[in-house]
Length: 485
Image 1 (cartoon, rainbow, N blue to C red):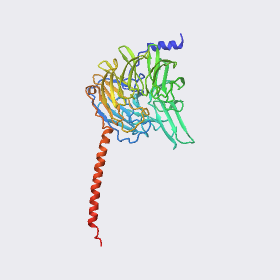
Image 2 (image 1 turned 180 degrees about the vertical axis):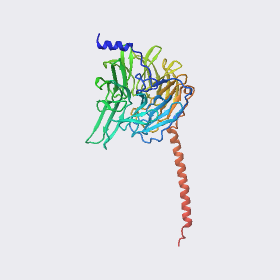
Image 3 (image 1 turned 30 degrees about the vertical axis):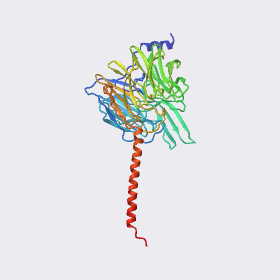
Image 4 (image 1 turned 90 degrees about the vertical axis):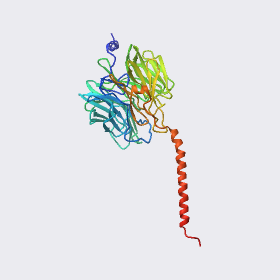
């Protein structure tokens, strides 16, 4: 029997990947991209809350995102939300009340979702900042444990984009894997360097680093393909999807798409072997054999795919869910790629889906440029409710420039699920599922129409006041002037 056949047999005997309680080990929490964490119930019922960062961001820049997507976990028995912000801070909030537990300040915006994992018995937060540093923080206190520098500072360094970390193993060592893209703005030392690095999760020492061109990289997915085969799957804006050996960073295969890839891949174990799913700005979702990189099926949408997909099970059948800028959320058969249903919003869908169980029924959550969070029944594609999350802070932004926050779901046994999403309008929202089902729990801020209606009224009032004061000044000047001779 061939080595591939033995590996496939071993994979077939493995149980389906399960969510690890209290840990959020990569970008969407799990290899299947569910964006949800299930925890044992507590006596306290989650409530709706909002959290606002300390300052307002006035200027929009390409690639900027107000919030990262939230990571979820537990510390000292309490559910925790950990999220990065444009204001250069990592915030840890009590998931049930929204109360701030701690804040850690980095040197630049934190746009990548943190990871939460137990390392040596300590709950640890791994956060990647645009200051070219990866931070390991104590999840209870926010105290810094160690840092890793991707590129040493020099006056001409232009900036960096670091992906969400993924926690796994490199050989026998607990490791943190992350993608990075650093550029130098000087003419003499011009540099644009992208790659994936693995560091020891206990002390931050580099284990290996693999250069992958001069483009920004997606968040890696760490998957175990049998007892020995540990893989990293990571995509690049140059249109390539790479499979790396987690032990040493060796590139095992690559697949080239026709356009840029901004989404992160997801992994699942199919009926005929392990699969990787990825979408691109060509508008095509592809399912590849995780062992060889060969295409298994593809599905064409009418616009960009910037968000990751998610894989869930409905009535014993695996489905792949993905949102497109063509305004549709699609559900596809995971084995064949055949479309089961589509749900249409009023604008392009930018977020990755989140999957949750609602009284035993699977639901799909996506955020759209119609400024709403949508909840859809996973079996039928029927829309259940929408919630207004607010309009962008800026009058003009470039669609597709930034990876905006995707919803994350905390499922508490015996309680209503809690949906956490960072809005491009400013606040971080926590929405109990049952409250959202009854009504729109968030009121969006005023639209631009209100500004343009109020502007002429204010200008007329200022002009009238100016005219009145000018006339008074002239009269007072005329009375005080000496008589003409």
